Length: 248
Picture (cartoon, one colour):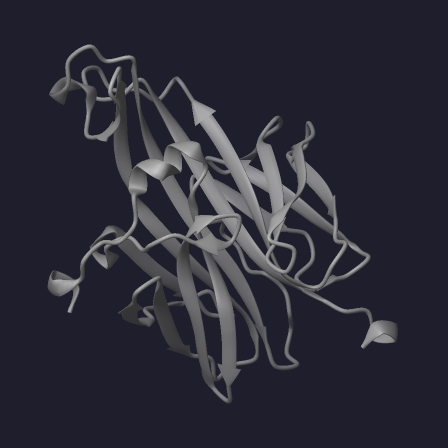
């Protein structure tokens, strides 16, 4: 199926802010289903070839399982068994892509392939979602998975509360990371901020539904001669924000 899949996403749009995220969760007895999207502000805009993607699910006991994957026009669907109660951490990695800018615009490929190069960099993206299942221990299990990782201090989120997040880069908390928060319900960016000296950001939650938190870190120290000048890491974490009991 993958060999016949036609990529519908313009991946050069990652330069302007497109990203991947995990949404549309469905839990049916012991089966979980969710979707991987690509777009801007939680609005799908095509879909990358699944050959570019790697999917991993951490069970509550930290063991890794591989979800089954099927692809549709604007999403890739992940399904896996969730017979145990607890937290399932779902990870999607998009293979690093190099983009080079010339006077004619942005192109896919290293700078060695082009003339009159203005700049070039590699972008790595990761999407993450934690699914609480059942009434068991709802505690996130480490270790962090990605180079740039958003870790929520609490699994549950409530409208009117605060998302207390911590960002790690190469396993250590990182200050000054660019953070944004998008509400799917509102269809817009709700907050734009940076992490503090402990790598934390506290974001007020002002509506229910899915929220996507996006962290961006640019590292000029990671460069390869004739290939790219810097590396950009983008990580998203999607959390469902519930209504307060008094509003239900």
